[in-house]
Length: 115
Length: 110
Image (cartoon, rainbow over all chains, first blue to last red; front, side, top):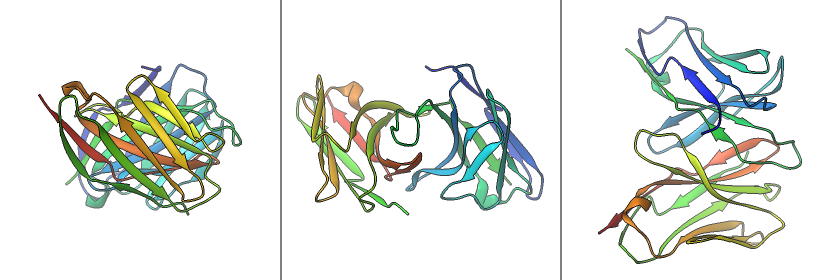
């Protein structure tokens, strides 16, 4: 597996609390992504980053924010968690450019439960 | 935005038989089509991919075909084995915006 870790791996929180998930890579890949995976929906892109301090929204970005202050770290924040954000969150990395997309390598995932 | 549909949602085959999973996409600008395998409780892992300038690609028992005109692509697994049992996802990508199908749960019966 590519050098990607996610923390925490499991989290249970209450509605209205802030939550931050961390993705850390040791591959020096330029692109980093956050997805959520829910039954019947496959994987859906939340936000992605194409460099330090450079981020953009994905398909399901409402209620989420991201930050990337270092190449190796990409943080996903739920400012005020809701039950609809209960999901498995996957981070992914890629060294591709816009014109030549390449494989995305996925992290081990974080299971988040919002009560 | 891009929309990817995947069929069937579940597929059960006997060991040794072939399995075919089909996906359609909506945006003709998509230029990269990966297939991921995800075992229970694990991360998705790439098994094969194809770019828009290629019609077919093979890797041992796995092949992918792409029909750009019809905007559909398919995964073919021959001589299936029990360890092929997993959920398979197709995806279509343009400019780092990757959209996934909903997945196909493949069960290979010994």
